[in-house]
Structure formats: C-alpha cells, structure tokens
Picture (tube, rainbow, N blue to C red):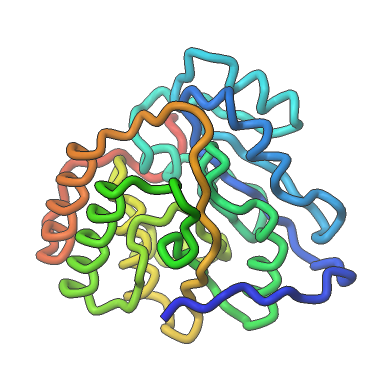
Length: 253
C-alpha cells in the first residue's frame, strides 16, 4: 500500500546535490510554474533543473533557460527517449522527475528527498491515484490507469498501485546496475522503470508514496487510446522478455 509523505524538519540542510529532470514538448504555459513549484530555499546543498526538450515549437526552451534550467534539445522522439537521455546527463546524485504541466506537487520534493535519505532508500515512485484532485483525470483516464495498473500487478506481482506515475525520486547510482535501466523509448518506459526497480533493487530499498495530482495546465499531446494500447501490449512483451528495437542509453553521439 502507498504511504503518505510525512512533513519533516525542514531546518536541516540535506548534504546532497539534487537534479530535477523534466521532459518537455510545447509546455510554455506551465514550464515556469513547474520549475518554481519546487522550493529553492537552501533545503539541499545544490538544486538544479535539467530540461530534455522534444523539439518544442513554442517558447518552452527559452522560458526554462530564463529560470536558470539547463536545457538539452533531444531531436529523437519519445517520452522514454527523453529520460534515457536525461538520466545519465543529470549531475546530481539524487534525481527527481516531474511532468512539465503542473500536475505533480513540486512543493513535496524536499520531503520526498528527505524520506529517501532518512530511510536509506534507493528509489521512490509516487502514486497519483489515491489523492488525485477532482478534474485531474477524466473517467477514461481513470479506467485506463486502473486497467494498466491491475494488469501490471497480475503479471509482475510487484506491489505498485500506480503503474503510470511520472514522479520518481531516486539515487542516480541505481543505474550502475544496467538491469535497472529502462529500455523503451516511448510512454511504456514509466511502467518498465517501476518493474525493473522493484525486481532488481532490494524490496526494502523501494517505496511508493501517495501525493496530490492536479489538473493539467496547457494542452495535452498524449494519445489516450494509442498510448494506452501500447502500454498494455508492452507489459506482456516485458513479461515474456520480448524487446523491440530501442535507442542506446545516453545522449546522441
């Protein structure tokens, strides 16, 4: 069962470097507020932001740079591709991920990182479903998330409630074990990452925590039916060890 974030002593500066990795594509309406939602008041030794941009045609990159974020233009397509580029590029020993649409609670990042460190964890994933605000998900999206999450639990018995969440907090060092590195270039990377983390990291080093999930700011580019069916199909492929063609880990040479 997912647990809730407990408010901890914010007076103690965490002796860690945290990098928030955010994939973007045409998110000019929300990228500034997304970055500003993460407290930057000295709660950790160093905090930076890495934007992996999927060739936005609006002002996403310029706005992110104006907020002090590092921006990398990833011309190869895919949500998973963005993270496969961003994870090895992140300079912090702790990585946090969020979407660039104000749906995830950036204000919870310090508490989540403290939880990771104080409990000597390696990886946290955030459950959106328990605390989703009214209007944050359509009925169709709720049904799709339930279907995918239930299928994933039946296939892998890995104890995760929200298989599609995109907010994670983890130690970059977990990728020293290449089996933990997700392979998919598309949306299925999210569920694959959770499955690999629960399979190849010690169970007592991983945790699912419930966080608020909010109404999206700006238009969505997600293909509800197409992405949903791809995710469902990918679960079965992963279960039986079938992997399609994917690009290499890291940024393009």
